Structure formats: C-alpha cells, structure tokens
Length: 130
Image (cartoon, rainbow, N blue to C red; front, side):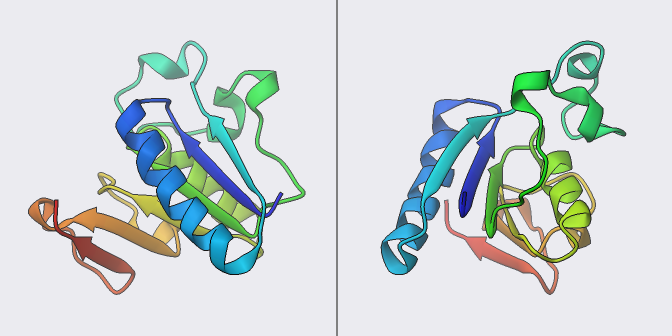
C-alpha cells in the first residue's frame, strides 16, 4: 500500500481524502487504499480527537501496523490520533497529511490542510478557502 486514506466514514470527509489521494496517485502511479477508523468501546465514547492509546482503540480488522504507507491522508478530529500514531511509529517512513483543523498537536503530522475560517496557523499548515 502506497497511499492510505483514513476517516470515520462521513461522506464529506471521504470525498476530501479520496480527492487528494486520487490526485497524488495520478501523478505518482501509487495505489490507493481507503479505510474507515471507527473506535470500539470505551474509546468511541470519548470526545472527538481524544484517544490516548490509538493503537488499542480500533477493532482487530481495522488495526494500523507495518508495513507503513508512503502517504497517509486523514480527515476529521476522530482520525487525527491515528495520523499522529502512524507518524510516530513509522519513524519518518510515512508522510502524514491531515485535512481539517485538529484540536491540538499540529506538530504531530507532516502537513495540516485546514479551512481558513478555522484560523489554524503554523509552519506545516496550508489554509484553504471553504
């Protein structure tokens, strides 16, 4: 797997990650794999973006493990902890992109693509209109 997309499954989030993944794929020839991450109990009861142990929160069939993708694209606050985990565990092998503004931890991924109205700023933040 060369490009992995990961969301909680909402249509708007899916379209954003798939659009970016398909654009990168058309330039690189890399294969795209789309997945959904839906935390199991008790993790799913926590507020969005709060997941202290993301490696244990997913059901067995959704686990994220090596071999790591070259590119991980996530969208939504519930998927951000997984992007941060992959960034750490892959030790730089995976370039991580998160679409939408996370609550915190901007430095935990390589790139944040956030709407301008969220006023998210930082050296790794690209603001978009919309």
